[in-house]
Length: 204
Length: 204
DNA sequence: GTCTATACACTGATAGAC
DNA sequence: GTCTATCAGTGTATAGAC
Image 1 (tube, rainbow over the protein chains, first blue to last red):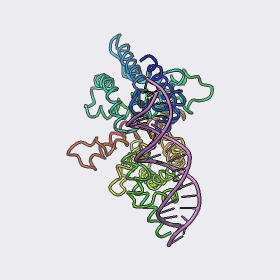
Image 2 (image 1 turned 90 degrees about the vertical axis):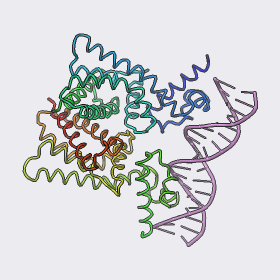
Image 3 (image 1 turned 90 degrees about the horizontal axis):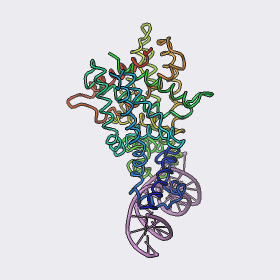
Image 4 (image 1 turned 180 degrees about the vertical axis):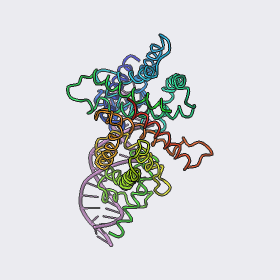
């Protein structure tokens, strides 16, 4: 249990980095275990399969992301009702503020890619870990947009999610203009996303 | 040239079906060539690599899709200026109306998946084949939304594209409600997409 | 030109020795 | 827990048949 924990962590660290840089299929277990300095078979011993390793990499980050999103929502509602823009900010900001060990923005890309992929098992896993957060925000949005039917609302949320996912997957890449710092770039991105999503959701 | 054409076509047909059902990495060349009734090596002979085969599958459809989108835009402008909703309809409708040989909706999923993936070489290919269409629509949108800066407009178009891509990737899947026909479902989808995108683009 | 058989270097997974 | 050896499966390349 003592040495196994460090092996596990070494694998997870190397996996996150390599998955972000080369994609899930692009990063092989042999590259990954070599980078982590562990034996190839250790992955299957500790995680059972490559797919389960992918899920574990996500779980570490998603647990924290979900917590931060809900906390941000609570904070927005602390002093009375939250505006639509505040709710959207609470949803978007934590995702763009993820920063692991300098590779945070890379992880955002992986997260977005995973969400965009329609791999059934991975989607199921994400919906299990994401589900309650999405439902919480959906409830909040339903309150703020009473003119929308339930069906219409779900459509809008789905479209909004698509836009955000798409934007997030590009965040941290080429898009950053020259001479613009990381923090400033992030604020710009958040502002654009919130403005677009709010307008789309408010449509008659 | 005579028999090679049928072999080429058989590979392309089987590829489109299998890529749609199992993804690019999920469908192996051995499954694919077995389904097409051709030899494994025929893929490399006719296309050079699996990646190039993927591109060819797209090119067949995209050429037609691009033409239809531009034609729809011209039609919308035939009797004077086109509204924002008409421009968006011209962009969205042809994508959802693709119908190859009964597997049209499957191809939409593949197209959306490809667009969502940030594989560099595939993206470059898509932008080369899609580029001029996107620029044409961007010009049209710039005319209809003069209050937006160029930078703001590109942001909005990117977000809109993300939303549409995400929605398209789900089109033809589980989402169709019971008792709703294909045509009716498509009209509903188009209406939702146009409404959301128009509102997002019009945001102040 | 078109097609095929075959081999090569990879992949993820697993059984079994230590 | 860890490691070696080995498995079936993958994309790719090529020599040679027609």
